[in-house]
Length: 219
Image 1 (cartoon, rainbow, N blue to C red):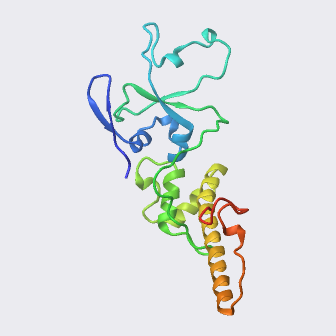
Image 2: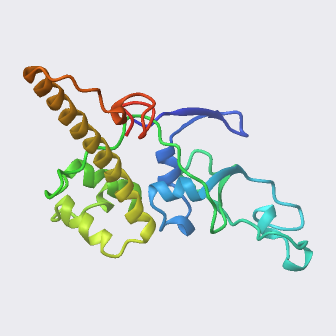
Image 3: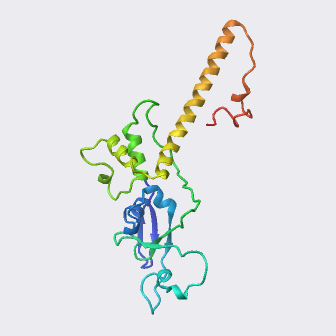
């Protein structure tokens, strides 16, 4: 479940909000952003009051001739009117080429299908909710579509970044499964040695401080 924060607005009223609210009520200029890219490529800022001589956001009301030379001004995009903080906050779009990374808390993503088999619906639905633009859950999948059909349709024209997100989630489980198989194989070899009365030193690869990391549980 999404966490809920309480904020006191400029009108002294207490309002509740979630990150889902921020995404659902994003401005139309950000309609093409998926959930993950929205939070990675934009950030929230308190809107400055318009100057008496102009209208709109102060950063966007300056004429080109009045701006000093320097980095490109970041685009500011207001929330839709239904957003609880629409009156005093907006999103700032990071410039292309930024190196911002997401910090995702909580349990890891659902496990994909076993190699060689189709991915399960929970995994496909989670990936679509992260990378495909949507404003209501019905946007993720047409009623007559399966999750696999919707996922395949979107990925056929998805950008490389979206493909990398899905590949990164799968890579975690590939590494985890590979490490588990190696540990199981080592245990089987040790049991076999004990049955045959053979003494063998433990492979340091699976010991803490070995070649592949700090311990056998690292993946």
